[in-house]
Length: 266
Image 1 (cartoon, rainbow, N blue to C red):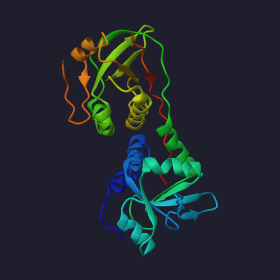
Image 2: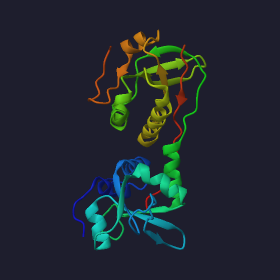
Image 3: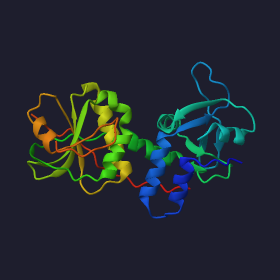
């Protein structure tokens, strides 16, 4: 029996104890994406092909994953071939093969769960969700009102992109149409990284269930005439350090808010 409690154990137990709380389920799914998982294989990888060990039910087929090596060994009873990948990397493989996911099965731990192929499709669709482009013009900048918990989540989630993001700010804006939004301003970003960063922000917004105001993204050059004003009234995002509030030709790139109802854990 596995005795050590993992983050997935804690979050799954929290989700199980709050039947009507979407936020707790989103926290579990978000952690599942970020956690390194050990995918049990039928045999060693040959020719770059990995054959997952499957459990089949009348309704679905499930690949088996574990959040620690010791749990994989507890399940198999011996040394077995596996592939170590984050949940974010496992999901598209499962979706392509129309497979569900079995996490920590038969180990008497709270994170034991079967996610159907439909659940996997739902979760991968959030990860792949492409923000829609806006064409409205910004008419006014003001101080942002985005909660610290959302800023902190952005800071943590996007830390792996820190080397691509020399500068980022949050401000509140009003567009010509009257539409009001929180805006994340990324400065001097390689154009090849725009889609990656926009999708990463989109994922953060969906998993934090931030419903108060929309959050948009814009990419500006360092010589943008609007950057001086943004730096003066905005809050700086520093993906390598703790967040700090600072007083310190443009179209909004994306409208990011499109929450989906999470599947229930079972």
